[in-house]
Image (cartoon, rainbow over all chains, first blue to last red; front, side):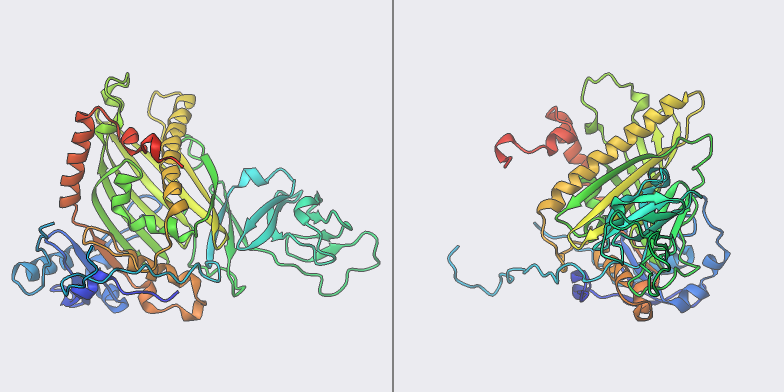
Length: 93
Length: 397
């Protein structure tokens, strides 16, 4: 199957973000203040300090790393400072 | 409509589909509970566009072979287990679990080339898995199914297991569910309030928290309030293309948490049908008799069955769509399919973007507002979520 592009990314693409803590480079998109998409790459995963320090959560799916708080803070700071777009306009419909 | 084109009007959106894939996913597929194959009878399994035979030899080891005898094409699934081998009903050729013909009772020797296809198997936590790989390679050591702690723990129930054949849909439909937050409200009567996906390597995870739906309980029903779940927390991961473990905790009004583990797995019959299986184990509450705990697991399973039946109704009539039109409150359908694609290309063709970590957290503000309103409307109208979902009689075909 040929993979199609996400129609939402056509309207507003992911933007590069560098983590304040580990300098890992990822791409981020925020459709609203509460929504976040993060595309990691293998080198950023390897750099991530929290991920290295994380121990698995209990349970059969505990190996999945839920997310990095330092990166979350970086993204929030950029969004609040206007350095990362937040697509939050409401439609009238 | 006037037919006059205006520049403001967007074009009609076309639904695109390349059709079901020409091959089957590489990975571990669960065929069901091992005990259901352990009776030393041959079991026919239609999977991956083929007919397979599953049988346990006298040593108790379960084997999976192509069902058609390489001699004259007899169907081994209609044969007999003799010793550790499956005997063909046509001429009694004896096939071992390794795919080699061990004996032909009426022949001096077995011909060279007497080898059929065999599938690598794994028996773990009561379930039987087979490894499918169109390239015919062995399963890599790092592609595994995690152990489930509750199984064989006396504090947990045994598996309550369900099997159902889905016709008229490719198995991608069920995999899509892992990112589809809104359908959990509309199809499964749950109320998600937190929803996040993480894809990485061969795993795809859904973190979901929800609240209980007050329109699920029929007003005036005899159930005690403390027995209604007020919320749930779930971490559900696909380990490979077809096997999901859902670590699910229901929270109750009296402060009691009930941990459970849910399996949601499938294997393709062909490009347009698949076998869906799901199973539940529940941690027994202190003071609850085993039968009560089993009944609780069964009740939970029956509720899940109801949800899947609703899914099936959707799949039966929906279009396969490769270009879904998403709103911002939808999950990462495209990125999920990019992840899923890794199982449909040769191992050497897996691209970094298929396996690199991707996170997507949904903003649940607007869905929560809308769904609260809908639940309130149902309650005000004396409807339950189930009766509201039922079609008016006139719309039945």
